[in-house]
Length: 209
Image 1 (tube, one colour):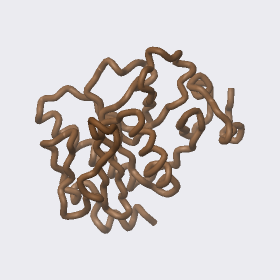
Image 2 (cartoon, rainbow, N blue to C red):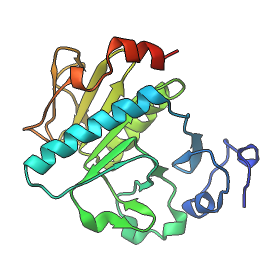
Image 3 (cartoon, one colour):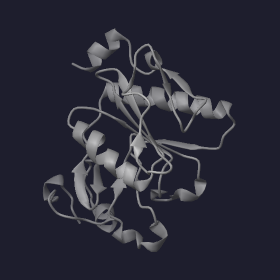
Image 4 (cartoon, one colour):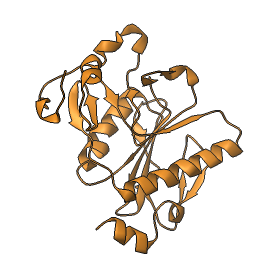
């Protein structure tokens, strides 16, 4: 049992059973058994996350759809065929900033067991490479239908949709930015004005100091 982050070997490999035994406060993900520290989030990050959750939930309630929309920290056991793997040996455990699924059967007491329909990650200092490359490849390989990357410092959102035939992510535009409405292939009736997602200049400046 590890009680301090200093005891964790970031070059080593671990399983979900190891992960559950850790007793330190810091948040860590397992990417193919490799531990990766999740940076602390600040006011800007939490504000943007809350705005996105509110608008997705508002839209889905208006559509009268059954859904589960969960913010981090929340474990997602990202395996294609979890039924054939002993849970203690799972080696991919992530905590997307926002997870959306339409399948109640994927949940148990430990989190989401399987593939969310949508994963959203919000960039902050120290996590850009992980979210834009490592997580991109991980979510694509796992079959997450849509992946959003939000950059609150530069006011843009990238929406990647999984192509049914190739199993690869595609995007209509390089990104959506201020003055545009975010559009989603997964949620085709959803339109989010990016001015409603990002804070006003006075708040943005205060929260990024």
